[in-house]
Amino acid sequence: MRLEWTGRASHDLTRVRDFLAPVNPTAALKAVQVLRDATLKLVDHPRIGRPIQRNLPREVRRMIVGHYEILYEIRGTTILILRVWHTREDR
Image (cartoon, rainbow, N blue to C red; front, side, top):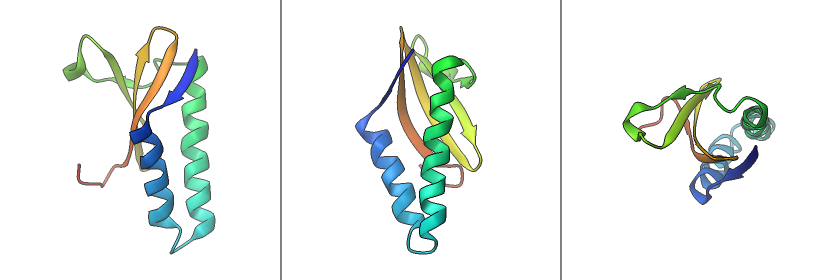
């Protein structure tokens, strides 16, 4: 499997970092690294996340990592990271 990040998901990761950095720059970098590392696990275990039925027939799944939610889609041999949010975030 191949892993790709959408522009929105990359922006989400930057937003997470920018939100945390003024208070704790080290925690900001660590949070981003933890989220990136979690997505790498999808390469070997793409169906680890919970399926989201409302997106059928697309195979969109949700993975929780700490206090963050990662939304991704499996498209053939590609895992597309769609969005990253804090679970308390209003969306």
